[in-house]
Image (cartoon, rainbow, N blue to C red; front, side):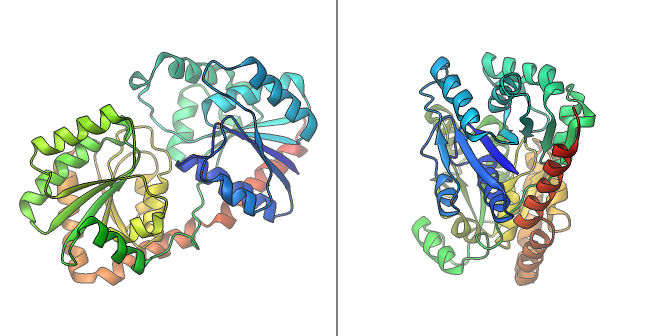
Length: 378
């Protein structure tokens, strides 16, 4: 097959990492693969270059830069002549659909990643784009969701059930594995003593991730266990970061909490933690942070959003959305378990991911869907 992926960028993000992983996996399985990007310069372009996958720059300069950008996209599809144009996320999905009228022989595959979105928290253009995707989804040939909850959510929003399919994310288990040297290095940098239990959230600073509930849970848990320390790994808009920092200070967390910003060495970050937390309030489909952290041998407290409960299975604790008290109890429970059987819990977490979410499974299941699509008549 000739497959062209379409995305905004390959900067830090779960969907971006998955696109790069899938593209490399399909290339390894003998297919011709290319990637077209609105914006260049993301960190996940490098593994594509290493895999020999061409990355095409569509040269989008801003949200409103449209005409020449569209012309470049139309010309690229004419040059590449893909069998399949596989887009990721709402805006690229809508643009991919536009290409169907220019090139009827190209099969359009959408990638959808979210679940139970709270669109009131986003601007009017994003809300309009999502509403438009719900109406136009009937024209996509195939829509691939990465979570069971996300697939059901999009179906409820009007996406056609007969064109929806589920392929869970894959985790690069060779990259994401325990890194004890990285753990020692980062904990030393962060000023975390050996006897401290470090609890962390790895997520961009966004209302969807609900850092407020995490911070409140950290406050409550630290009142019960003075040995706990906390870290937030990820970046976001300065005003939101300042507001979160001020809230943490108001709750007296400043001496127990570190704002670590974004990191590239994620295996070291996950291994530096003792307990991971995913506090997402909405929007989460398949949490890469949870699965990657588990592949590095860490147990998680997660909210009941998306497929997080299925990912952690018996290797973590699931709590209701926005319930800081339940989250604090979950942190304390895991802390107690780790004091008793640390090695066993770490190994079980990794084994669970290795057995269920390998990159090979991601590529193989996607390949089957795409090959079936090409044999179907319109």
